[in-house]
Image (tube, rainbow, N blue to C red):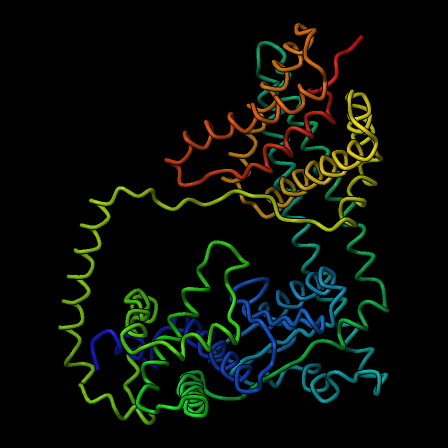
Length: 511
């Protein structure tokens, strides 16, 4: 075997827990991928999307989330890891309410002797209704955990917003003249705090709903394998090896497949866009059909850095590996150094542009838009509707279609800002707000220009203004590429409709 083929096996079962947990998760994912392929299940696996593993079947409308933990110590229902998983799973349960969901907590370790709930829960999981007493215990414990974690999360968000408000109030108090911009920021933060409190009340009502919690607890599954942390890696490796033997027609390629498939999981897990982090049967079929050279080229040296320290010796199931791993280490590192030097040289000489992170708004469901407008008391939306009503030269169908698009983009934008703020994506939030300020200035100038130009119709002005915003975004992106990000066009259009709803912008001429 070549040096590249040994990279994936160069691990140590005595490595730190963080590295072992990483390998445990990847091997579990690979085993699941192989078993789905063997069973011909039309399931798509997503890596690091919503949880460690997400399995979704769109045809049958089923979804299964798995949280994986590799530990040396026992776990109980009050462990922080389990509490956090419960909270995340409950959010996913509400988000994916249209799917038949299952929420799995899987670990190598065993249940703590101090635990009084999980073992009973496991005895009836999926059928808790058959034992009312145990079902009540599970429901009560679930509510207790969800409330505890939620209170901490809510308090943390409130403190962050109130701190921002306090900071701006201090700046105003020491300012010589009134600062309208700071006052507007405080108003926005007050609104964010109000939205948070409204959403919190809705979420707490979900926790208190016995029917929702009963359904949720019945969808939780526990898997405690009771295997030593070090041994669990060897067990998983052997299970993967056996699965590969079952599906491969050439046993002499098992080692190559092992390294290639683990590399593929790593490549998928680190994709910037969530929708690209998937594994399915067609991808596995494609890899199984690759030539040896293509497989080798797909085993990346970067995997060594992530698996570094896990110096697992090649054991049973890898008999074709005849080289001594430890004797090869120096040669391996020389190859890596050489490869790194060549890569650096190529990067210096290349003329292609580097990759950039795309700041874009997530999609939302129509129900989310309706709920958002309802929470606003329809004040801003009515202004937006009025301004579309005053655009001349449009038939009713076109006007309604444009308004629907504008409404969705405006609400998506404001929900996007909320998500960035609540999840503490400070850099992305700040950059988007800077762009919003530029768009606001462009809107003000455009309204003035419209009043001065008596020849242009409101419909033509609308189209002209959208093109101007696109050009402004292109200029903005050209300037910020040095920061390794660019902004999606929908963000600017969302900002435009947000400005219109706030009265900064209109596309009609006042008579």
